[in-house]
Length: 90
Ligand SMILES: CC(C)(COP(=O)(O)OP(=O)(O)OC[C@H]1O[C@@H](n2cnc3c(N)ncnc32)[C@H](O)[C@@H]1OP(=O)(O)O)[C@@H](O)C(=O)NCCC(=O)NCCS
Image (cartoon, rainbow, N blue to C red; front, side):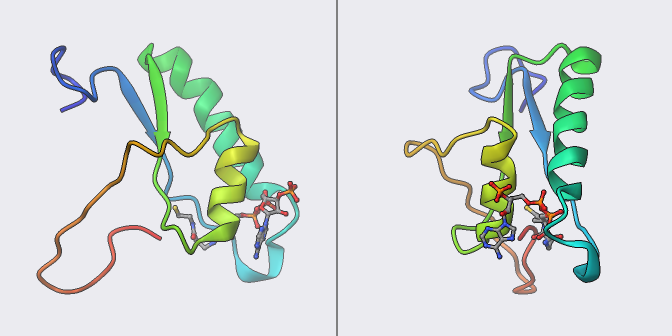
């Protein structure tokens, strides 16, 4: 959908799937990797918007994304249907 110019998601660059080892969390590594990904992604993909997806209960991920300049859009939610019951994202 992000490649179709008439899509609501046209020009969107997704950040996410960052994971830091449990022993190294809270040192700024997640924020650093995400910030670099956003910086380089904007250059490489010439995107118009950046979106990250985190579950409401994932406070570290939300804090990390907000530290990188993203904010919660109350008009937007992501719904994932999974027949296995497994989560696609945290
Ligand atoms: C989300 C994750 C990548 C963050 O990585 P990290 O290197 O620990 O994060 P940072 O050290 O850069 O911290 C970023 C912000 O989160 C905050 N934070 C960290 N742990 C937190 C917690 N348990 N509750 C609330 N905020 C928290 C930090 O305080 C920091 O904000 P601040 O500098 O304003 O205080 C890491 O927790 C992780 O790997 N989680 C499991 C995988 C996951 O959920 N990935 C995200 C998928 S969407």
